Amino acid sequence: MSSIFTKIIHGEIPSYKVAETDSCYAFLDINPLAEGHVLAIPRKEVDYLFDVDDSIYSDLMLFSKNVALAIRKVIPCERIGVAVIGLEVPHAHVHLIPINAIHDIDFSRPKLSFSELELQATADKILEAFESA
Image 1 (cartoon, helix red, strand yellow):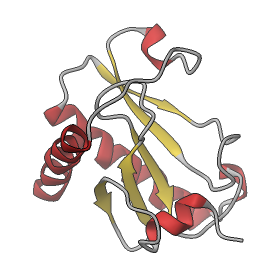
Image 2 (cartoon, rainbow, N blue to C red; image 1 turned 90 degrees about the vertical axis):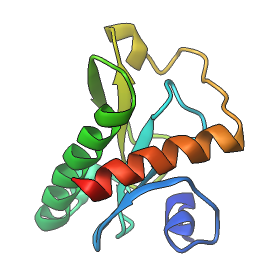
Image 3 (cartoon, rainbow, N blue to C red; image 1 turned 60 degrees about the vertical axis):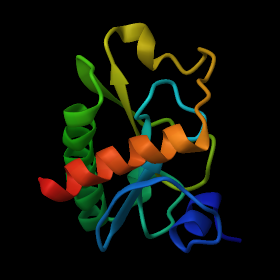
């Protein structure tokens, strides 16, 4: 059975896309810790990040870097925090989270809520920054 992320990649479930390449896809987390919280995933469904083959892993990490740079261009923050937890969805993914302090990346904090219009506006800004890089 396909993961929810594979269904997003195939367009079976909508997402707020912020970037994509032949091997990777990135979209806004709909339960974010901050505005611009993005999930970067390989298109190939593999449950555990460290089981991903080396070429896809390298692609995902470079892709994540480029997405983070795009986020930082449009979301005011000190840094883009990176987290790989991998327990919530059986599809390798990297969290890219705009942060100003260490507690901003605490996953036990309450999640934020944004309207569809706000999410789409944020996704559009990040996508534009990614594509213009």
